[in-house]
Image (cartoon, rainbow, N blue to C red):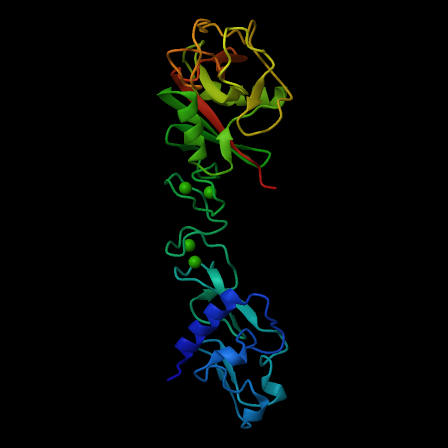
Length: 310
Ligand SMILES: [Ca+2]
Ligand SMILES: [Ca+2]
Ligand SMILES: [Ca+2]
Ligand SMILES: [Ca+2]
């Protein structure tokens, strides 16, 4: 036997696989009559008209048993798309239902990244909780109420979030992984001009106030080829891990120097401790300037940046 609930589910499933069906002819046009079955599209066939019309406000469904006046919604507005909103935060999720009136438990907005948590929705305030609260696919980034999180100072510049993280010891690969864990657009910091460089350095200086003047933190610099033999690496073969162009450099005096290179071995990978090559880049956080260093070295911090919104 047909029920409004079952009919609604049927329409929802069919809409998911028939997204291009026209919507303008009436409230049930998302359901092909030949496939509807069970009477859920009762009245779609004009020959079945009985001269009565019923609107079921509680489900948002409009049951047409008639003619022209019942082919559309009660008002001139076309049927709307309504997204399931289970946590009541006014943000829903796919798939959509089509109905003239807003069905209970739905929203006209879609994009809720957790429809079981009313604190998480697009535009919510990001807080330090290991979750992406504002549904931008970035975890625990800067917000008006989130300036520090898990040992990282947070900032935002030109629309892009930054993390400046203080740790006891971390190699370059682990630092990059820590950045990536914050979101797929997050990588180690790349620097593209003096203003970028000075601003980043100021953030880190504040974080490490009173620290070692020779202390270093990882940035996204790495050699394009970490497997070079001998110790005469091409000093220009550097790249940013986020894929951005190397259009600026601020090496410290005498760097890159690959000071720890052992010319008698051939490295297996970028983290080969038995055959050190200074394949990764870091910043002297108090003195400024960049330094090449073996990627397995224990840096005491790192900086991450998310790509700004397009
Ligand atoms: Ca929701
Ligand atoms: Ca939610
Ligand atoms: Ca977020
Ligand atoms: Ca969060």
